[in-house]
Image (cartoon, rainbow, N blue to C red; front, side, top):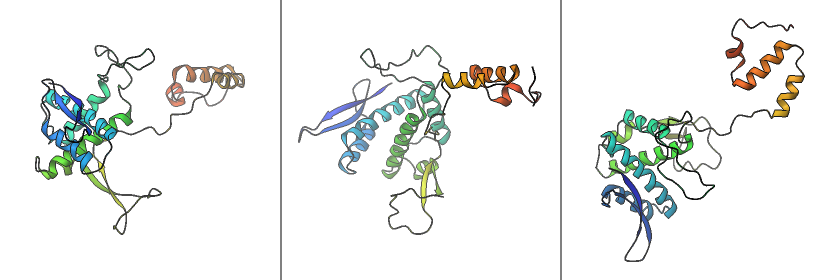
Length: 233
């Protein structure tokens, strides 16, 4: 069974919303209630509801195939879902010559199918949905509590509203997370690599620089402990 995000229009005031439906176009009741609460009670935007609906539909599809209770997942089950997100390409095939298309599901790719930031966003939506289910009594409160833990902040971000709390700031962190790469590693250009090779005083150093550039290995991985410290010809 697969679930999909579906756009809705209110017959009362023609307000646009989002819900989740299955293959038979049957609405997922609990997901629909949560998405309505996001819009009507929490004041979230329609774009946010659309994003959350797509992420929740993806989670519900995986839960149905894996035999997991979607409103009461365990920590290890949520970790399995995160690994599945990293291995499974997006099911969206976008139109246009220059638009990104989903990879062939029959081909195993070495690189992750989704970026860590994308996986983080999907996991955040799932945990928020489980917390909502716990608040409605659809699952035990302990289920939602196991998915996060309270920790102290060593550094308070600028502009962070502490509210009425006093003392050391405390936040809830999800147990299942993916580290985001804030900035990609810096690399040398071809001209810079060429200048570095030309600056080598001997053939050994030239070989090490060219091998490091060609293989992407670290110096310790390439040379090992037996690599001589001094130069030579």
